[in-house]
Image 1 (cartoon, rainbow, N blue to C red):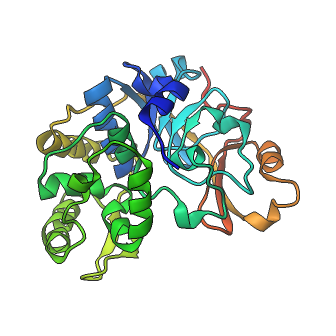
Image 2: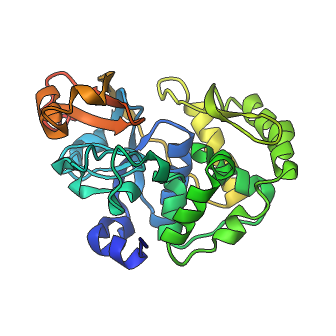
Image 3: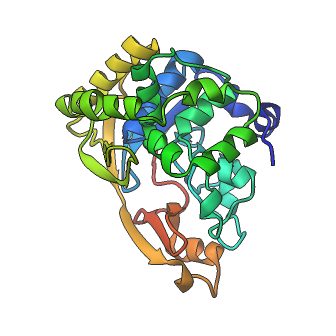
Length: 309
């Protein structure tokens, strides 16, 4: 199957709108998306979500029914979102995802199709969609491919990456991925780029994927906006310097809404189906994280949207 930009824009026209208000994932992946959206579309950052806690500004409250959720998969019917998790279970797609732009849904992938799951990041999908490229330097590539461990996925799941490169039409994938699957690029990451990130507190946990040349374990960043604003600003500074993307203004957070995150085995929801599970639990967001497990978040007292005006 092939995906065309024109079809995406036709079905999700808000992805080309300017000046939208949005909430982003509280992670490295979210921050690089924020820089891109500010620079190219003048979108305004109004909050963060880490799949358990929601940090929002007064502007988010005023626009709660118009928000876009970036690098996230949420269920409220009025919630527009762009993310890349598997969310269909046994080919069932909950109604709340009708307004979500998700590459896996576009090609009808379900919980049994992890072998073919979208392997790239939200930022790469945005760059493809708007046909934008970065400077051809190793550090610029690293900043982009570090998001969602894409440089490691290109090593480990190369055939699937090439499948998706052929699925997302009309983009210079050869330029983006040129010479990243070799010892020289990996050595730079291990000896220069990762140490630089660690010295700036741009990574605070290890991932699960190891590189094939030097056995380098992936590094990731989870952000807590309660005390990590300096890290966010510093990241925006690096993106501005090396990608030439103008940095967003930080939202003035006025409230944190705490949810509850949990997991459940997929076979426990098989009998009644994913839609009934979502209804019974009042699920706000979820992702199928493996062929056996679903991770989800709920907010006490929530109907469809935890944000109150």
